Picture 1 (cartoon, rainbow, N blue to C red):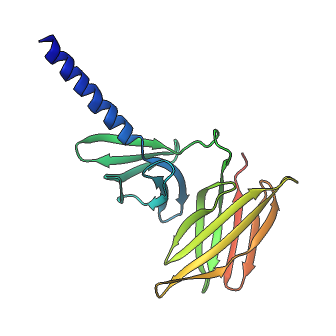
Picture 2: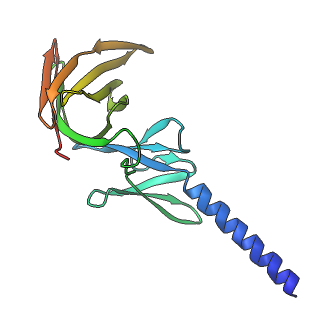
Length: 194
């Protein structure tokens, strides 16, 4: 009886350990909050590509169920499993620090997109799907003189192909707003002070 109990106990421990490690693979690494919708950057495995999901979409067998903006917690649901609550990843232990921006974009015939909140990583390209095939690629870098350099690229998918609409480079004081207008594309962002 003791051998059976030990076998059952060891088996349960292995199952629990496997379940916990499988759940820990999904990471919540960024977000883009717009008035009409929020989009969440997730990785199914550490070090793998980031995917963007909205409420109701799936990743790794889980459905993105809800987001608590006060605690930066994303809840994922899976049939037959307890909810998986993921906090926005804290990057204090890695070289690239996370910061936030808010602002607005105007493109073309008066189309305006308000960005309530977006998370960025310094020294990395941050990719934000803005809708209708428009993608913002933003690569912020801290410079030795205390300013920030923002390399941006606005790409549009047209007839199955990617077209770069604009790719400006801006240098601004840290924690200060930055903006630009080029052709029909106009944007202004405000970094959130750390």
